[in-house]
Each structure stands twice: as structure tokens, then as C-alpha cells.
Length: 508
Image 1 (cartoon, one colour):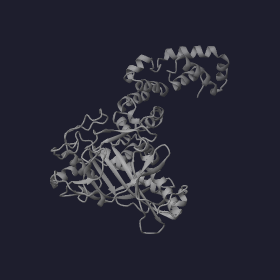
Image 2 (spheres, helix red, strand yellow; image 1 turned 120 degrees about the vertical axis):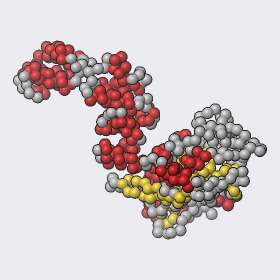
Image 3 (cartoon, one colour; image 1 turned 60 degrees about the horizontal axis):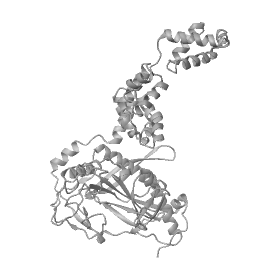
Image 4 (cartoon, one colour; image 1 turned 30 degrees about the vertical axis):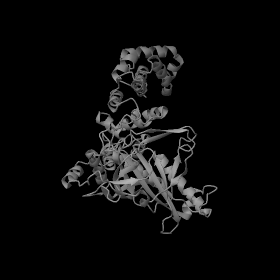
């Protein structure tokens, strides 16, 4: 009989007494133009039920046909994960009640996946600030189709319980998926939540580099089911697992695993037993709640799909796909770090900010690596945070930023003026050169104009001028400030200072 814990166990206490075992199932929506078994488009955000046909609506007599590009993408994923590619595999029917799947079963793969037996190495931070490599073994990567989308209206949770009615959108039904399933991940102890996050993050980077998905977790293109179980420390027998479904951010993956470890420890400490079930993660509270009792494979009554022929990828085709795999993200990052001369910390911060590609494109457009990194991680990073959007969604391109950086480098703009130009680009005012002209932001470099401004500043502050003549060089700042104000900040402060000191015959 299961018992309900009255309170969570402190995480460190839970880890001291129990060993966590993880299992991560990541669903990847493939970026194909059409669905897995029909020619309906897969565009995200279309009007409900406008991207459907007799096949994905399961009309009698409508027969499926496999999307060859989806198979190619699945093979690409399997190869990048060091998997074996099956020489022969087939689809199966997975049966249980799907309210948002018209045919009431899912066409998937069961014991004959297209890819199996691989691994992915991930880097995990250590308490001393270093990095540790953890190998996550892959059980399989199999093909299947997505379900439709249910919207539960009424109630307070957005779930079916308590809702007044539900709306069904079948646009997503039949969208190609690859599900990547790990083998049990053991030995992680206290770092289990961090390992889970690092794995999903590394997988997301890999899939994006392969060009097989946009991996938008916020749009459901990448979803993680996190399986967690606990066993008494040192006991080799796994405990009963729970499966927290459809976790849709890296931070939430970490939080969900951490919460489940504390919750399950509370159940076990109270003398209860963990129920094998699905659970839902609440983003607002960081907690999980019970869903449905978790079925076993036998409950799904898998049997071979009779309407689809088996798949036997030509070995030469598989070899061609392998030969054309792109540079893996971590290999590319190491190469770029070496080329750019970044420290480990600088590169780590760049990766955390999601700015590696932005910096690479900015450098390719002519900017220096140091300036490109500084702009994307500091000023533009601040702008992205203020707007609540990713860096990649800011309304400025790497090429535009490179132009601004170049003008700072050649003295056409000061850093302060450059920020105003960037603000103009972000506001949609046009290209940098047009904004500089429209706002009158070019640096005042004409010596005669600067000399005039210096004369007026000295005349207005005779006491300061006397201090400079007497050798108090630090007083020159007041004159520089007055000149910068007179030129609306468009003068080169270093040049202004040099001209003032020359005027008084004083060495800086």
C-alpha cells in the first residue's frame, strides 16, 4: 500500500540515504515539411484543424505512406548519437485511449527501432568550478507520430479535471517524432538533476546542429519525460519509477528531477511505496502531481503495423548520411574557443547565453572576437532580458552589429554613441548608417570644432584652467566634461583631453 508523504525530505538528506536512478525520454518533432504518414503540412501555429486530411483523421480506407525525409532525419540522429542503424525495422501499433488521436492508436516502433545502442557524452559542472564528463548511454531512438492537442476550457488548472469542456486540434496529429530513450543513468548521486539538464541541453544543441528540428521547447518541438526512482544507498535493485511528462525547459527538467527525489524520499521514509505513474510538472510551483497509473509495454498491445511495409535502409545511403554529418556542437565550440582566444569561463558564459552562433556570425562579418562577445553578452544581453526574449530574437543581425563595432574601432563612433545606434536598430529605425545620419550621431572629429568648444569651456571655468596651469592634471576632467556636453557626447574624450593638455603645455 502506498503512503503519502506529509512533507518533502531535504534534498541532501535524501541523497545521503538513497541512490537516484534516471531515465530520460526525449521526444523530438522533426522539421519536415509534411507529416509522418501523409502530405499535410506541419506549420506551427496554423488555425486549428486546417492541416488535416483523411489519413491523419483516420477516415476509413485511408492508407498511410512513410515520409522518407523523416527516415533520413531519424538516421541522422541515430548516427550522431553513436547508435547502430537497423538494417531492417518496422512500425507497430501502440494501443491505448488517445482522446487527441483520431485513430485511437499511435503508429510507433516497439522492439525494432531504427537506431539503438548509442551514447552521448555531456559535461557537468563540478563543485570546484570545473567540468566532469558523464556518458549517458542511449537505449534506442525510434520513429513515431505526434498526437493532436487538447485544450481544456474552464477550471483552474488547465487540465481535464474540473474543465467545462475540451477543444481538439488535430493539426499536430501525425507530425513526425523521434523518441530518444536512455538506458538507466546511475551513479550520479547529488548531481542527478544537473546531469538530466546537461543531457537534454547537449541533445538540444546536437539536434539543432543536425538541422532535423528547431528544438523549440516552448513550442513543444522538444519535450522530455523524466523517469526517476530511488533505491537505498548501495542497493543494486532499482526502485519503482515515476515519469514526469512533457517537461518543456532545461530549468524545469532539473527542478522536476530534484523535486521527485525529495518527494519519493518522503514517501519511502514514511513507510510507503512509490506508485508507478505519470506525473505533471507545475512550472509555477516547481512541484509534480499525480497523473495516471503507468502502463507496461504489454498493456499497449503492440503488434506490427499491417498498412506499412518494413524499412530497410540501403547501407550506401546510411554511409552517405554519415559522411555529411555536420561538425558536432562541442567540437565546433572547442575549435572556435581556440580561434577566438577565449578562456574556459568566457566560452562557458557564451554557451549559457546561447550566443555562440551570434558571435560566430558577427566575427565572420568582420568584428573582433572580443568586441563581438562583449556586445552580445553585456549590452544586447541586457536588452534581451529587459524584453523577456532570447538573444536570437532581438531585432538586430550580426552583420548590423559588426558595422557598429567597426565604426567604434575606426573612431567614427564612441561606445556611448554606438549604443544609441544599436538602440535605433532594435527600434526598427533602419540600418546603422541611416540611423547615424538621421540622429546626427557621428563623432565630432574636426579639430577646429573641438578647439572652439575647448576655448569656450576654458573661458567658462577660469579657476579650473589655473589649476591645470599649475600642474594639477586631474582638473582637466572638468574641461573634458564641458566639451563632451557641448558636443552632445559626440567627441572622442581621449582626443579632447590630449588637445586640452597640449593647449596648456602640460604632459598627461
